[in-house]
Image 1 (spheres, rainbow, N blue to C red):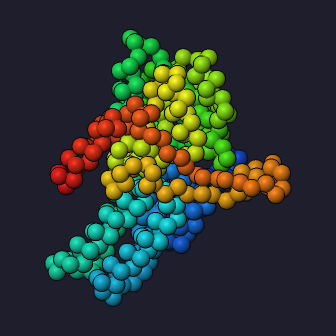
Image 2 (image 1 turned 120 degrees about the vertical axis):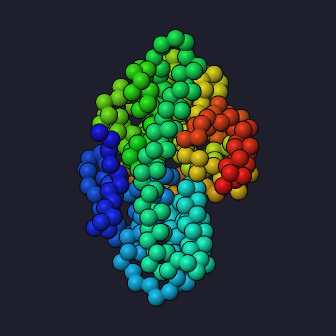
Length: 359
C-alpha cells in the first residue's frame, strides 16, 4: 500500500498532511485549517514536491472557503484571487501551484460573470474542482509510470532487468499518493523488470536519504542509498540503464528545473551514455517560460547547509550559497515523461500548441 502524504475528507472538511520534516524517525500528521497553515506547511517544507505543493495549497483554500461566509460572488472571486496569489509566493520555482492558481482564478472569473450561476453554485463548483485534484493526480502519475517504464524498457535488450538512478524524492510523499519518477520505478517493479534502484542522499536537505529511502523500503523495492558525490563512480562501475528524476518546472524548450544536484547527474549521464529522463505531469511544462534562464531559482536558508538537525557541521562564520534547484539544459535530456506520453525536448512546443488548440 502506498504511503499517504495528504489526507482530505470533504465531508468533515478535514485536511491533514504527513509532516515530512519529521521523517523517517517520526510519522505524524498535522492539521491544515486554512490558507495560512497551507502557506507555512509549503514554505517550511512540511510538504514538498511540485504536485503535492499545488494540491495542499489548493485544498487549504478549499478548507478555508467552506468555513467562510460570502455576501456576493464578487467578494468570493476577490478572496479566491488574493489567497491563491499568496499561496504561489510560498515557493516560487515549482510551477504547479502557479498553474493551478491561474486556472482556478480563471474559473472564478468565469463563474462570477455567469448570471445563471448563483453564489452557492459558484462556491460548490469551485470546491468540487479543487477536490478532484487528488484523484486526477494519482491517475496522471500512474500514466507517467507506465509511459516511463515502457520508454526505458524499449532501449533494453530482451527481458533484461534494469538498474535505475533517481535523485531527490518524487514518490507518494511528493504527490497525491503514487509518484512521478518514483512512479516509473514502481511501474518497472510491477512489471518485474527492475533489478535495482540507486537513490542519492540529495544534500543539503537529504530528501533522498530521509524520504525516498523510506518509501523504497516501505514498497519493498530493491534499493541502495548513495552519496551525491558517488554518481559518476557508480555509472562507471555498474551497468546503469537510465536516470529518472522529477521536475519543478519545465521550460518550453525542455530546460528543466529540479532539485539541486540534478544538473551534474545529467552531465555525468551524458558522458557515460546513460539516458537521462525527466518525469512530470504535463502541467509542470510552463509555456510562458521560453528557456531555463528565465526560471526563478529559490534560495534557502544557510542553516540547511550548516546544520543537521540541531547539530552544526560547518565552521561558524562561513558564507553559504544554497539554491534549492538547478536547471538541466534540454540537450542533456533524453525524454520528458508525462501522462500524455514521452516527448523529446524539441517536441514540447508542438505538444503545447496542440493542447492549447484543443482547449
